[in-house]
Length: 509
Image (cartoon, rainbow, N blue to C red; front, side, top):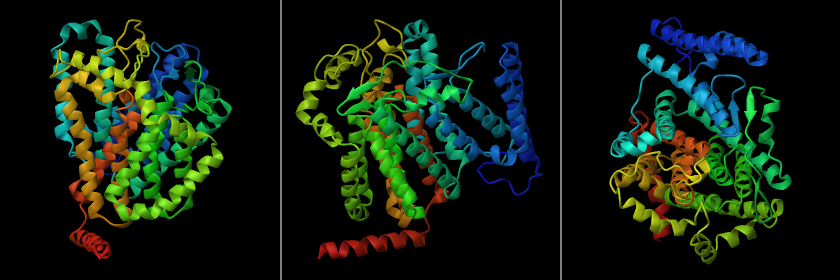
């Protein structure tokens, strides 16, 4: 049964709740019928059978399977485990779609239907409406002011705009559909354990050169594999790509999940979360990505900012982790020491390197290009780079902030900065107001979101769906945490203030 959270409604017979469930069932059943007919017409027995069995299972177990929490978990599982742009759902259908698009489209359709007819399902504010509105208006005006360019690239522009709107909708879906507490904790456990599994397979890929995610078609026959070419190498082994589109994107995604292991360990007190944190760290390093290393340092800096005393107590564990890395991945620390050397970075990134130029080399020419359309850019989604099928396409910018400045101009650039800064500031205030495990949840989310935002300086983040999708889901989590109805009580705030003063007194002496 569909509910506004994961918990079923106490009164199953309520008319509004029944209508919401019925609508979702009809949508899913209709989707299954269409899929069955198309698959049957194409002679595909397995998809046709799945299209019949799936709706029946949903009807039989609607109470658990159709909760919004479960559907969010399904979306996250698909994003984590089915590599984007490496698999399509085709096999004779009129169009080829990627699995994550199908799942998100169906869930969003059910949610919008429930919003229309079920008063218990509400669109809730996130506290991020200001920056979201500014950025969306910048996108719209960038398109209106560049109509001729947009018309020539209408299909690509429509794809990019729909992508970004789906990211924004995910903030509101998460913020409206789950509650802080057991519901959110279950989702966090799912993505952390899922991320740890991806990290484990990434370590195997780093060692053996074999990507286990390239063989999913053997277990899910409806998936069609799209070859992504040869693996990349750096330092002591293959750069693991796992279920991501690129090693950089994989490293960034795993680092974003890493801080959550501290919260879950504080919450549950179980060793499995420390082990998951170790795996996520090793998996991130197996990508050979400077971006992942920078994001790790940003994460630690945010911990010092929000939870200094507790973070200092964790430093011995960090030393143990360094020893584990040296034993499990010999030579890796040396590789990162070399590629993070400032002199090496400046020299490498100042060179011109074909379609993907050095990050520092890009700045001057990009600012010259931006000066032609400074306020609203040259049109969101109109910069088609060489790797997108345009041999004479635009320069690949390994800097999402610079790319956004060109796409949507100064106005959109400010809106995007405002979005991340506002979320992190709200989480920071909540982290300082809460103690114990509760205070670590906003702290870890602030660390993850800040790390993603800083990492955007070092790669074109929005080109990689998995990590970008996770960042917007985390913004949805932030909206849930900072919502006024989750405001800590006066007693909780006084206890937090008293604890901070008690810690400060010995330091003052």
